[in-house]
Image 1 (spheres, one colour):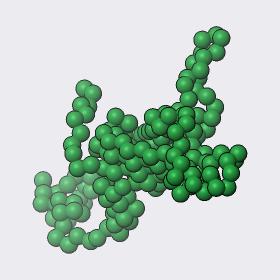
Image 2: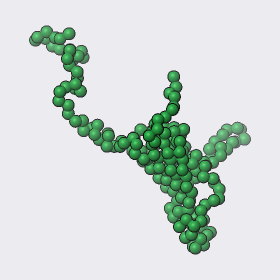
Image 3: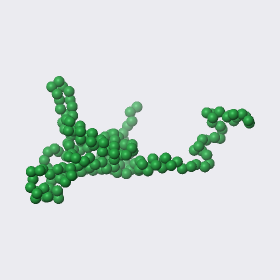
Image 4: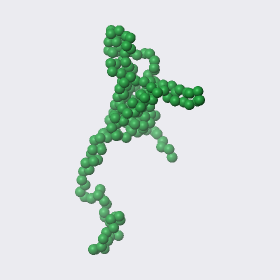
Length: 189
């Protein structure tokens, strides 16, 4: 219903033929949407999370005498540090909600008791860390740190490649690559 000539139009009711600001013939570029697009980047870009410091493998849950189950403090601290690194790497972007491939590099410190020659050999890759903790426990720790921050949930990690080596500066580097495959996740009803 169009208002009568000379009467005041109710701004809360649309006028026939008025399609709002998006339907107008002249559309202006919104600078804020360009900033948001630039800040979020392409959802297919890989994300690299670097957790500095000595990597900590996922510890087994402990139990008190009263029956309370808890995660060891070292594991909790490392995962909290990893979550902070993941938030900084994501820079406000939403979590990836598609299947992903994760490449994990675990750089461990060289034991201080080793000779200079053995240390140099370890850093160049001649000696590999084959002692405990196992690589799968490092993977669990990394997945728990990036869960719901970088990827929507850890079940979306369909390929995981991990490499454990000695390094000068110990750290854990996780690079997450979104895959072009569709997810078969069913949404709850």
